[in-house]
Length: 313
Length: 279
Image 1 (tube, each protein chain N blue to C red):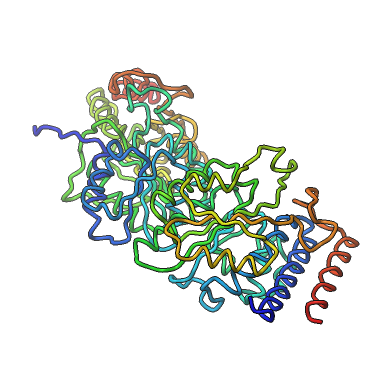
Image 2: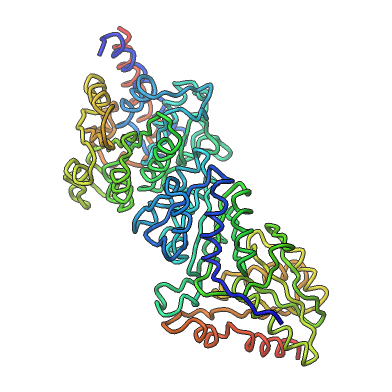
């Protein structure tokens, strides 16, 4: 068995921007004094003339991105998820969303896997906030391969895109040579008939691990990766509801308003079946090593296995 | 300024004011006070200063105007109609269901509107983006932003001011419409943004003061604003409700529409002013 490579999707984000800088002349990158952490510094090094540090002023950064987009540029505005979706929410809604401008928001350090920095920086509400903005596309890639392809897909999509990246190194399970990223299309990673585990971002590899363990216990779990949370691939979700009869959602985000909500909304309307949501259960995070926090909050294969067993019982 | 040209601009500004009253009256809502205080400014910009064309409203080399105090959309709509971007009759359906002219500027729906605005404090940032685009792509257009004196209480304005100066965006001109009044009362009583000139100067901008209702002074100010080595703030002293006697300097006309009787008085005053100019 080959060794599993791990890489944080924020790293993939910075690298993808740099790699795509010569292919897309309209690409311009903004940051708010976090270039070393969001990894846009990699782009800055390669393409300093198209990199602008806005300082610690995220609202202004979003407005600048909007202005650049009115002139045909493709700006990536980068900061932590907390500030991109929280601090700057109203500017994203009114200056970017309402005029449907071609701004890409690169939000890193999403979820509780931020770790030691604690609750103020652990944003578990961003998907919920961004989902409510009409016309906003939301991508939450699961690994390095998907993250890089998602960046290019965002460039080629005309309209605002919120992209969510993590701080913690995540297993790279997609094959760059064969994987095809399709915006708005879920990916069935494993077939199964007893239930479907629908996961996003960092939780996709946990879901895969859980499915293997369930298989050993005689439970056949389908695993679906939803990288595009909006627009949601309702077809793949409703098919899963019809064919497996039970759905378990897993996300490193509040159970309110994120993937679990989106899936439940879709299932309610097309094929009502039991849906269990794994996520941050309406509480704030706290300081600690990322992997331990994920375990503590039940965002791990072990808890997915337990919840899956309860669901199929 | 040449006397004939000045007379022309005064007449256009008068028509722009009539359009404001027409729009707000028919909408039965809207913001006449702050719209009337920027009519001379908008008239000067659209008929004297801006390199724009109603025939090609998306020209990538055009000058841009961001109405950051977006609630004063009736004035922008009225001047765009005078300039030929759309039929003047549109003003009568302002704020109606299905109308092109929304309560606050919508760049997607209205030709000539360069940026959607209305939520205060955001326009100067978008203007920074537009000015940055010109620097990046070697274009020589300019970006003008109109802000309210109350509006600059929003902190984001100063984030943008800092960014513009830091990036030497000398292709930006911000005009602060200092009419002295905001919804809750005089700006000096609500939460004073003064001294406005000192604040912009401290943020690294060139600052020019201007009489908002004197075309000679407006021309002098904008000529001085050209060829600056840094962004320029023009602080204009204006009269809220300018041109309609009972609305002038009266905060209750910030966001209220005239009834039929008041509408007729207002339109008659403006018609008389126009007749006098046409003398």
